[in-house]
Amino acid sequence: MRALYRNGLPQVEGAELLTDAGLETTLIFLEGHDLPCFASYPLLGTSEGRQVLKSYFQRHLAIAADHGTGFLLEAPTWRASRDWGAQLGHSPDDLARFNKSAIDLLVEVRREASSVSPIVISGNIGPRGDGYQPDMTMSAEEAQAFHAEQIGWFVDTEADMVSAFTISTVNEGVGIVRAAAEAGMLVVLSYTTETDGRLPDGTPLGEAFERTDELTDGGAAYFMINCAHPDHFRAALESDAAWLQRVLGVRANASRQSHAELDEAEELDAGNPAELGRDYAQLKRMLPNLRVYGGCCGTDHRHIEAMADCCCRIRAA
Image (tube, rainbow, N blue to C red; front, side, top):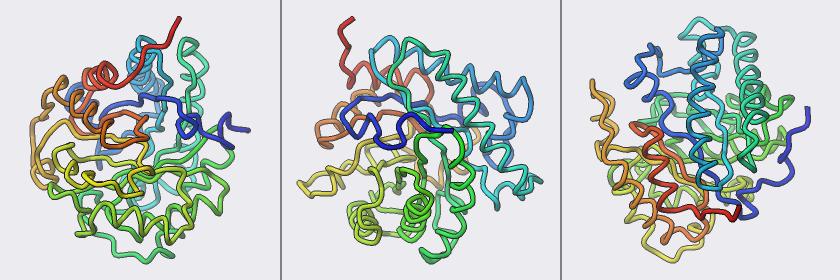
């Protein structure tokens, strides 16, 4: 199947896109779903689960329709890789079906969302280990070999791109970009930071982006930042460094808590949606090419609406 935008992404060419919020925290804390290993992809195995996911995406697409923006649909496959799947009793064949089923669902959602354009579909991949800490010591070559499997499952689908989120080491990021390039898929790479604006392994954020570009010949379509509150990484953006031009998207947390605190939290910290929207307006002034707006842990559709209110232009009818 041929993806719509595999040869050129609208957001790279200037389109503003909303995306969704914290899928897993919304499903667990607000909707009461049990998601072992923080994995949402098993919901694809039942018609009821697919409808839960479909309704979630439709709720966010309605915000894009109201604000005249495009939308980036991220597959619910952040945990649908070999090591995490094994913990849930799923074989590689099972995981291949889940990843492809996820894209099929998003194709259906895109087809039905006639009032939003453009809509880009992304195959979402996560870290091999815990995204909150660099607990998987891999070389770039090992990371490439590991992530090539899941990326390969997206190749023959209608995914326009793949996105890797909550990546905590440069080696893993480099391996992902190389694996996607070898598979012929456009790839977006998103690093996470601790409260000091550094990756969990201590690498400064800007250095991580620069090293990734150097080691992959600029292979990523663009970069993002996710799973941290803007207060945690804002200071890292206070420069005129060239790497700032490469950051096109942010998916921030609602909470100012550290990763360690979030790991132990039994209640959701949803922060202040309006305040987070204003934070994004400030980030937009600091990141000259910021045009993909979404949320991560603790955010829901209210936060996305606040981001849209503060950042997105209303298109003429």
